[in-house]
Amino acid sequence: MRIELDGRARLLGDDVNTDYIIASSRKKETLDANVLKQYLFESIDPAFAATVQPGDLLVAGRNFGCGSAMEVAVTVLLAAGIRAVLARSFARTYYRNAINNGLIPIECDTAAIREGARLRAVLDDSGVRVIHVDGQREVEGRPLPPIMLAILREGGLVPYIRAHHDLS
Image 1: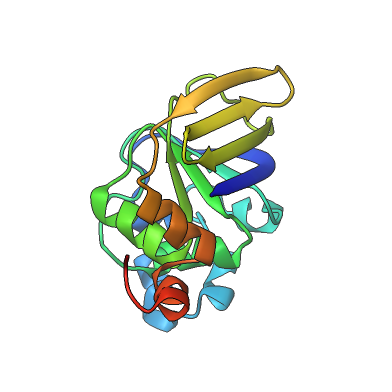
Image 2 (image 1 turned 90 degrees about the vertical axis):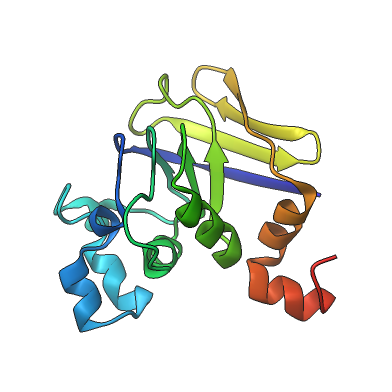
């Protein structure tokens, strides 16, 4: 099973919490990710949402997704056209919410990735590789268990269960 993504790097820092992804005040108005995507990262960069392009790859440091366990902090990224987040580490709840909703969490060394860099991420049974297309460098990522790859390939946990009728 293989997943390949090509996209432009959008850089964030360490400890990006779920309220930075989408503010609590916005979640009080609606939980519709298609509405909320216009407010993506507004407390970090008010212009960020307007500059997102489908296929962009978020690149962060340590502890991405810390804070509350609201799934909308995952689904709003998907609604904006972001299919994956590359980070040095993830908050565990965010990581599982990402898998369950079809957002690809890639744990890898992100220190050498620059804003706007062209990246290719390849996930398969042999592991995870992130290729810096511009510089032809490659970084190994933390491999995902086969069941998680299968869930991501189906687009998340609910589509996986619909297709396979169980988790085997």
